Figure 1: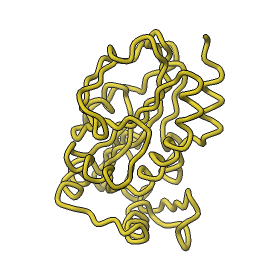
Figure 2 (figure 1 turned 180 degrees about the vertical axis):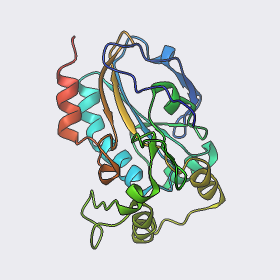
Figure 3 (figure 1 turned 135 degrees about the vertical axis):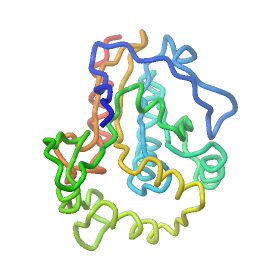
Length: 226
């Protein structure tokens, strides 16, 4: 199985990136943000209802971050035109960047899981190499909206139906290509150095879709050196 880069840690430089914006015109890069601290969240595609909810939360906290001089970005694993169509009807103040290949997720070291084959003698190493049995046993209800804790893959269609969200061909293709991509949040200071990191579900699949709260994000921004 492919070895993955570990997540960036505080004190390490953010990698160069250049991605198209879904709710603005043009490309945005690390260089275009240089001199300004920013919070960047990496998410699965629009097929993930929990990721959609976290983008909404980032939109709610964005005014406080902007008042502190911090830009807010969300990188979504969705093709550009699909993302533009969705957010045309659900606008957000967060700068939305499209990365359908998860290349920037990988550059920042956000994990993507793989399942060991049945009967493998290899030791599971969550979140990179897990057992299908461990994932199948996971039960989540991070927002309290589900009737009961459910397996993550079973929870998605329930909330999508609740939201009236219909997956199109692009969503199905992204889910098939990147089914086990995790999410991550990185706060980067004005010099381009990582100051704070939160990676989804590092302690196991029962923590999938538990993201940092607005209070945790604001607290991290408050610790930035001015």
